Length: 174
Image (cartoon, rainbow, N blue to C red; front, top):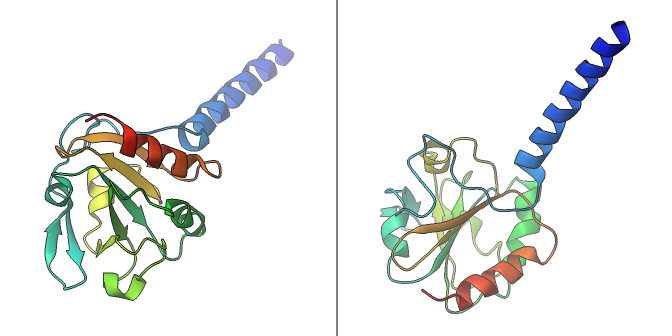
């Protein structure tokens, strides 16, 4: 009887660990969680961030008219420092918007990605964490030319996976 309880308890703990692993570390795309303002296959809600001139810019508006990739990252995040170089070379048909979660000014965090055309922003109001509950860094958003959130990734990927996905996204039909 005691062996059955121990076995059942072990199975429960193992199943919980497996679900936790799959949710946070399994390679794949994750969207905003239920109840958040941002939803996959819907237009992005207003996402106010600060540009290098100190002006408020709405990321949702900034993406309209061209396929865009928004990357929320932190200078102090070791995973972010491995993901940002994966953006280079960045497809010229896409727009890149980098949002630093820990700098006061985007000018203080120039060129971590190596993409000269990247638009730099900061997020002092923690927009990412308000609109995407359970968010982690880095968060990569794939947004189509209508401002619709097509895909959202959280965390690290296998080396080369992001570069391949950028090319696929750039080449995909509108």
